[in-house]
Length: 140
Image: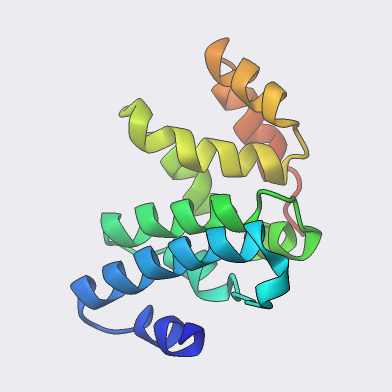
């Protein structure tokens, strides 16, 4: 089922992509809470969706990646560094704070900040400093 949903994430129809990413996000929560079920979800298409011109693609990708990076797996953070940093930085600068917080949290994880540091820098208005720190982690 996961492979079919990952294929649907690439569908030209936005509603299909949206529903597939929502389902995969839910499954990723189960996979993280119960590793014994053996479900593996590749982050590749979620990272690629960060670069979409469609807001719902980006939003759902951020939600899924927040779940997939909860344990800070370096291979996922590295993929984000390689393929998604500019888009995440753009989203983290959005004026709508409710839309910017998720991308900001991902950038904080990429930058190596703890969850408390991410929360503190957000609360203290240090968004640009965190974004700059994350962007410096990109491969040259």
